[in-house]
Length: 137
Ligand SMILES: [Zn+2]
Image 1: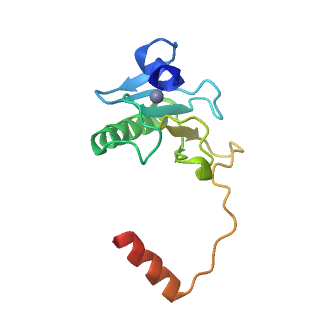
Image 2: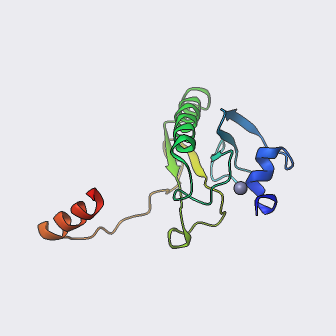
């Protein structure tokens, strides 16, 4: 399905994009439907649907670009912060099935709410222990 994937086509240069950084395995470019001035996407150059499909090498390369682009947002766009967001899987509201991380530069009083979770769960000590054990296995 590679040819049908718009992010693969961006990597191949078949769809134009505003590239801002890249390394051997990952690419950063401006989101053309940005929530803030400078919102960028960081993707693997080799197709992976989501976090479950990406190789460890690719995620390392993505991590490095996320760090580099975040630093530039702070230094060159004068951002006061950055949100780094990913949705992996339908249940997580993923809409484009080529792994991507949104980097949203944030400014004091910019009016955005990229962290909408107001409600938190109340879990017992036992439930925490059970979940931690499952994730440790
Ligand atoms: Zn793709």
